[in-house]
Image (cartoon, rainbow, N blue to C red):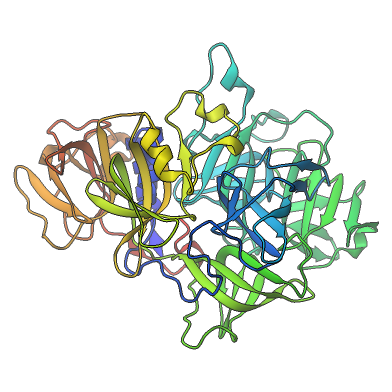
Length: 568
């Protein structure tokens, strides 16, 4: 597990908002070990061209041009998008966004979706934000942000005569101040993601998308919402840190109106209210409570493909999104994933919906995968070794882009107000779209696979610029050399830095936050480098500034709390 508590706040203060999340992600993991596939019989190969032979595929939308989920491309010409809370159904993929978690019901052995079910896990005001752990608290739920968390902004002020700045990173979110009648609400957000442990002792939700909006004014019973594992006692019902007032609630159990006494401990429930709770949210006077599920689409006994983050590992089994995955039928020699790994599992769901007999396991992102964040121009794009993959070169590093890579284009005017479903930037159009882009300047968060090769977890096109950046651990070889300048390497990227522009994270706290201190860069130190590119090296000049600095946060320390491992 990695201790990032000191470093996270320092990084956010020293970097411009557009870079903060990406470069911080480069410091998120402990290093060592690479993303790998233990076993994968789906045949997708990450191509994004065909659907696996399953009835339900539950995972994150990574791109549009049809809908890409779990590496498969699903056509949406005849699909309906169904809000599982309200029951409202719309035609096509309008309203969907990259980063949303959806349950796709599709035809067996076909790549055409019939239904896409959506059910965000949390909706409400941010009551607290902890920059030391990368967590926010919304509606009593602890939400873990990660390098994979996307952000979108739908506030009306974006289209004002003098528009507000779109929130594109965690740094733009605001938390509630005060309490009760004197409270000033924080940002209103809708959180998509995966249920994690559900016990309230760590993260309850691992966020894949945080959407910011104006506070709702309508009468929808799910204007404010929490979805999670219910704790039912003689004194009442709660979802993690949120107690439910059921005095005027309509409960829906097994799809039918029912007495709320039918709610059972350990069930997944979705609770909503048309009105905001008193802040900070600890009690919700629920208008509607719906018995939910870890996979919304009824699929008991059917083949299901499930994406999520591992919360517990046992003997011959592990837990993803609260579902116990029995690994006994996996190919001989298949290693179990670790806590914090993001996995994709194919198998048969039990009648109760809480166990899965796995036939295939793919570890998409390892908790301890060595991460790297890069900012620079794409200098080449070539077809990858596998169909539907590409190799891009940034700062001299070849990086694989595949159907699991989350793609975004923030280089064009009003990018934040476009309908994401008509964005043509997806894995199918990747090479031609990037070639036609006015800007080749990109921001990439990548992970090393088992062989040390880089695989992009996200790639974002930004407005053209000359600034370059890299975040990650300092290489042991070639060994760092002190002097004027100091020379070291990050994943083979050469950095030549004036010692006066090298600062430590500890110098960026409290009253000394404006000071810089010369330090010795050592192998294994986690660094964030911003500068200019010259002859293949990142050059950091003598005067430190927002775009010219080496931030050395030292080595990360191990701790005992496995719940945090690899999530931020």
